[in-house]
Image 1 (spheres, one colour):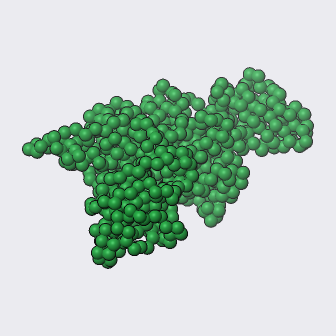
Image 2 (spheres, rainbow, N blue to C red):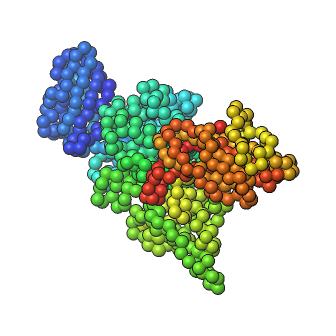
Image 3 (cartoon, rainbow, N blue to C red):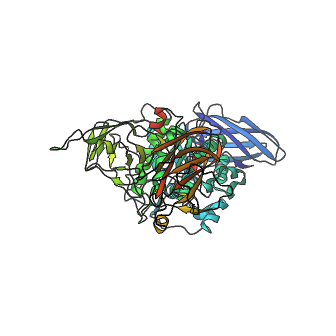
Amino acid sequence: MTIMTGLFSNMVLQRNAKNVSEALITGEAKESGVVTATVVKGTVAVKGFAAKKVGVAKGGKFKATLTGIPVGGPYTVTLAVGAASVCAKNVLVGDVWILAGQSNMQGCGLMPKKALGVHPMVRAFYMSDVWAGAKDPIHNMWECVDEVHVQINGGRGVKPASNWGVCCGPAFGQEMFRRTGVPQGLIASAHGGTSMAQWDTTRKNEGGATLYGATIRRVRKNGGKVAGVLWYQGCSDANPDAALLYTQRMKTLVAAFRRDTGNPRLPVAIVQISRFMTSEPNAVSWNSIQHQQYRLPFVIKNLATVPAIDLTFDDIIHISGEAQYILGRRLAQAIQALRGDPKAGAPALPITPAAIRMVPGYMKGWDVDAWGDLVIEFKNVVGSLRSNGLPNGFTLTTSEGVTCAPFDTVLDGNCVRLRIGSPQKVLGSTFLHYGKGYNPVCNIHDDAGRPIPVFGPIAVDTPRALTPFVRTAQVSAFLPGARKLEQLVLPKNLETVSRTSTVDFFTFRNEIVQRGDEDNTVFTTFRIQCAEPMKLSLLLGYDGPVKAWIDGKERFHDPDGTPPAVAGKAEVPFAATAGEHAITIALGTANGNAWGIFMRLQRRDITKRQALNQDYVLPVILAP
């Protein structure tokens, strides 16, 4: 007899809801007949498992279901048919977890001086398709079975230095065992540098040739059932194109894991990407991924986001070995909260702003009614908010992208007071961030040691569901002027070229200045993709006559636009069906006095709670 799936020496069998095994085992057998199972713990046979009938062998194959072995172990399991038999030794029954994502889940940390030892009740299914005690590095790529890892690496590579390769898995497993007393198994499936596109769930049937296919192959080899998923990925999607798709891709991925493991409520704990020590100045896409990950628990049920923004590094982007141990324990706490464990110690949802309000400032000798502070009340806080040293991490930005930081941050229970030194009317039009940029200093946490996650932008005033400003669009040549645009119609077959602005104000300043006091008209077109029907508003700011068309139909005209351009000056409501839509804006240059436009969209058909929790889908601004 040869076992192909479901039972191997040193493995962890996934328990069912009754705390016993329910493993489907397949294999090959030369003999035909009844398959029996004998299970021994130590030297004592487990009750009911003395040559118990568990399956049938015929046609050279056998199938068996091993149901009823209690949580714990280790067990020796012998399957037999006729005179043939096969034995799996040192088998445990407990919980099995998928570890997936990119390099920080694969593990790139250096071994701490006080390294974790191997725990007899925590096992790993290594990349070599072998079960053994969980010991870093558990992602032994140099011995991988699945071809996808060889292809991505350009070969299997060589075994790294013995002090490298720490991931969060072993620490997670040991903390889970401490909390539950249940054996833990880890299916190592991550691969460094991989993007969401490479985790394409539609390629599952390609098996070991794809990342998702390889992961599901490994799960099925071990019986097809798991307790949950740990996911750490996002760095490779921190670019303008991929960042726009991240939330939808995560929804697809989680749905696929739940479908392919047969558990529609499979717990998933993800790690919010941390910092990146880089000289690159524009962190918009990086912060977008972090903000979307912060929002995912409000978008996907039974998912927890675990912050890592405060953890130490061993290089410019990888969590240190010591920090991986901390992260593993945080993931265990989050998983137990998702499972409803009353002893979890903290909620499953992250620390989240519940309310933001402007209050009079402390500025002595000034008109205090004119100057304002911001008070942010947080929910899901265990105890009070604390900091290591002076509290850090909060910034504000204007709609034009100007950033300012508070000159003082005061922690008070579950509230944070930001002393800004700006007029309240200015604060009301700003956006709040925590952890803005690639490498912020963020050191605020609650009494359970959970950091505030990176988030933002969040509108300080009434929260609104806003897209980013349109910075890339199709632009026409400068056409003969149409004065105040009263008779202007949208030209057919308008010739355009792609253009990108480096700021939110989509400006034509240089061309207009070169033309002096000429009166011209320029058309700007961008396209959006709506995942569902939605009520939207086109928000415009402009400094000259303007006219707008949506899907070719004229929807707005202001013949009297004058400087300065104010973002959101005009609101053009419209209903959008699911699918693509084209929006075109004509700007009259007003004899050289107009310079450009602000363009963005607001979703209007959401509740205040949805707006506050950012629990909504926005239209995607498509690349030209």
